[in-house]
Each structure stands twice: as structure tokens, then as C-alpha cells.
Amino acid sequence: MKVAMSKFLNDHKPVLEELLTLLQEHFQYVSILGTDCAGKLYSVQKNGVSVNDSRWTERGFVVRVYNGINYSEFSFNEIKAETLGELVQKICHAVKDTIKTLTDAAVSFSKYDLIDEKTITDSYSGEVKIFPGELSTEQKLAKMTAIKEKALASSELLVDFQVRYEEVSVSKVFISSKKKLEQAYIWSQGYLVSIVRRDNNTKYCHKAFSGLQSAELLDEMAAAIDTVIDTSSKLLDAQPVEPGEYDVICSPDVAGLIAHEAFGHGVEMDMFVKGRAKAVEYINKPVASELVTMHDGAASASHVSSFLFDDEGVLGTDTIIINKGILQTGICDTLAAQKLSIAPTGNGKRESFERKAYTRMTNTFFAQGNDKLDDMIASIKSGYLIDHSMSGMEDPKSWGIQCMVLQGEEIVEGRLTGKIVSPIIMTGYVPDLLKSISMVSDIVELSGSGACGKGYKEWVKVSSGGPYIKAKARLG
Image (cartoon, rainbow, N blue to C red; front, side, top):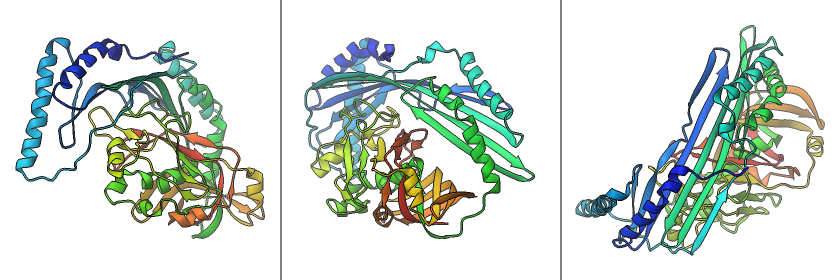
């Protein structure tokens, strides 16, 4: 079933068109982004249930105008036809006063040219099996409670079993003198969290779920109860890893963490403009094994960060960042693209209509190879299969990487032994890690259950993933 466009935005289209016309009398370039995102977060555990608005809920507009030097933006969440004249005057005065204040203070400006747009009219409607309103809050909580109760009845080790589910309906419109775009879709995410205890030893494990889906995700979650309980129970016997360099097989989840942290942030090209990325020195040079191809883009996959257009009205693309080991390019927003004299890649994203657009990742992943997982395991004399990414840190300027992974399962003489080590910190120099990749599996999995922050702020939805990859890594 097709996702319907927001009634709020549909009702406001005429007044937005009129505002665009009025502002074009004062500015050479004008664009308007309208957003209406609504969602709920549901949580069930032993001590009760909760239902809250999603953190991704927002409704409002942002106007971007060319001020003669660069671009000024003005955001608001109310607009009425009868007060458009006042709004236009307010925007004009705000732009003029800001430029004068900064000029008087001798603040230097980054100068930009007029945005060069092609004429485009397009729309996109996502599809889901269940619309958010088809199941009541009580029905969703009942499904989640059933998952919790089934889990708690299956193991005496469980202290608690948490079930979280979030769904968000996204509607956006973008208009300028040459563009009329709109999109409506739904994404959802969920978590199963198993907390187990033996004597005074407590461990936990979570499994995440996500996609361009709605409440049908709950059925997928229900099928994974045993897996997450089994993983958390094995952690009760886990030992620390002996620090050193190992042959490792990274799960798609961990491969996604590497793709995101190692090269995702490092090729956000607003960092090129600011001189904060080492990757600019390696364009068209080898940075990885010939087996490595890496993508990013709203059109590169179908997941939570797939869309028709970004928050600057640029159509989503499939950007091949690394092609058979060679660094090809990065990703960029519209203004970074201007500075670098390249085309924008559709990666200009805002946390909300009240925030600035930055270059941000969308769906970032390594492409599939030709190897089978069993053959990859069989090729290792001594090493680990590592899984369950927890967090990561990157250093785009020096290409250092640090990834925290929940567990590794020992491999000896080509076989999994069942011995678990936990937790694991994987560190290294990005090109060394990527150049060591010697096998790549023939399946790709993406996950989009978290969020990406830029500088510990400006959070946006992303997905990441890849195949299983065999590499050499420092573990500790």
C-alpha cells in the first residue's frame, strides 16, 4: 500500500507557492523545504510499558535565499496566507540586518555562486504492508508484550527482556523556481534486549531491526527471540581477548561500522572544504584491497535513509566511493559541491527544519563479493568471527579508527570453537585495515537502527552494512 502525502503539507502547497513568488521579487534564488514527520516510540519490559512521541517528530518550513554573498536561511512552523506580506518583510529584514551586523563586525564571509538547478517535477510514495493507524496502540503493545512474555518463559537466566519499536511517517516537499518535489514514506526500527544473570555475573545483548516498513517489523522481531537470548547467555562465559593482531571475519553489522566510521565520515566533502580530511590527498589512489567497493547514496539501497531528494532538493544518487580498492570520490551537499566545483551527490541532510544542512551519509556499505562464509571460516588458522557492533570513533584527518564490538567467536584450524571473547576494541589505520581484506562474502545486509551524529550533534538517520569480510585487525 502506498504511503499518503501529509495532509498538512498538501493543504499548505498553495501558500508555499505564493510565498516563493513573493520572495523571488527580492532574491535571485529562493527555495522552500516543508517537513511533516510524525512517529511514536513504544517500549515494553518487566516493569511496565511506555509510549512517547518519536524524537524524529517535526513539522515546519525552512526558506533558503541568496543574499548576494552567500545563502541565508529562515525557519518557521506557522504560515498563513493573510500574513504572507509580514513574513516576507520579516525575512528580508532579517537577511539585511544579519549581513550588516556581520559586515560592521568585520566578519569574513564564505562567498558562493547562485545555485544552478535543473527543472525537475517529481514525487515518491513508499509502500508498507501495514499503515501505522491500522493497528491501535493497544494492539502494538499486545504484540510486544507477547514477545516479552515468550522470552521470559524460555530461560531462567533472564533478568529482563526489553522490546522497543519505533515508527516514523516522513513527508517532505521542496519547491524553487525550477523544482517541485514531494515524497512520503515510512521507516521503522526495533530492538530486542536480553539481560541475563548467573550468580553476580550480568550480561546483555541486543538485536536491532529496521527498514522501510511499519508494524510488520514486529513479526520479524518475534522470530528472533531465541537468537538474542542464546547470544546473551553465551556472554556469561566470555573471556577477555588477548590483545594482538588477528585474522578476523567481520559480520555485515561490523563491516557496516567500518564502512561508516573508516570511510563514511572521512569522505564527507564539507570536511574537504575545511581541510579536515586526509582522504582528499588520496582521490584516484589505492586505499583498500581490490576486493573492496563501497557505496553511499539514497539510491544505492532501499533502507531507512533512502529517499527521492535530500533536504536541499537534490535527487538521491548511488555514489561509488571506492571502486576495486581505488578511492573515487566523496559525498557532498550543495554548498560544499560549489566550493569543490563538482556536482552535489544528494547528501545534504538536516536534523530538522530548524537546523543547517550538512554533508551526511545515507546508506553506506561495502558491495558483495564472491566468497562463501563457510570458506572464509575454513581459511583461518587462528582468529575470530566478530559480531554485534556497539560504537565507533573515527579521525578523518589522520585515518585512525576505533570500533567497539560486543563479541568474537574463536576460530581454530578453520572451525568455530564456541569460545566467546567480549568485549572487543578494534583499532588501526584505515588503509591498513581495508588493504588487508582478502575475502568478501556473496551476501550483503544493511542495518539502520541507530543515528549518526556529526561532532556529537546534528543527528540524522543512516543505514550501513555490507558482506562478511575477512581482514587483519588489531584487537584488544
